[in-house]
Image (tube, helix red, strand yellow):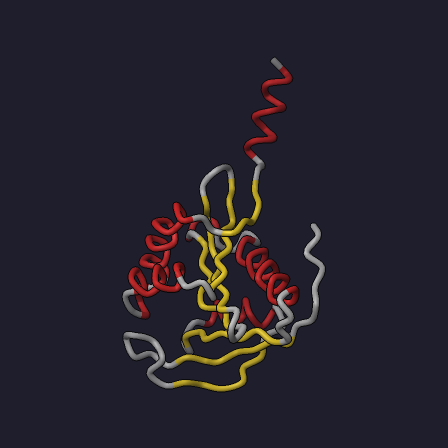
Length: 163
């Protein structure tokens, strides 16, 4: 009996980051629609990025299903999207995904990561600032709904991806 409880406890704590599978597209589409809806209808944009061979998508899995994802456009080193289910936000999952994407970018020989974030999204600014990103510019009317964006960037090197 004690052995079964120990095994279940191990399964309960199972979490990891992996490359997205075709089956993850529905989750990514739903989460994008939920967390990015204020900026426009990303339910169609994100799946187009997902199938682009120049985009790497990583998902954070916790206890079976994915709870977050991040997308990297490897041609330019742009982080296209990073999102975590609202009930799992502020628990380190976003940071883990960002670190994983940085690691992949470093291994691919990229020297810089960049991304756009809504000018009014103060939580995102703080998140990326803590990760070492700096504002390098602004872009008016960036999002489908017309909101302006900050362009932020960070230099990276070859990072170790061991855990």
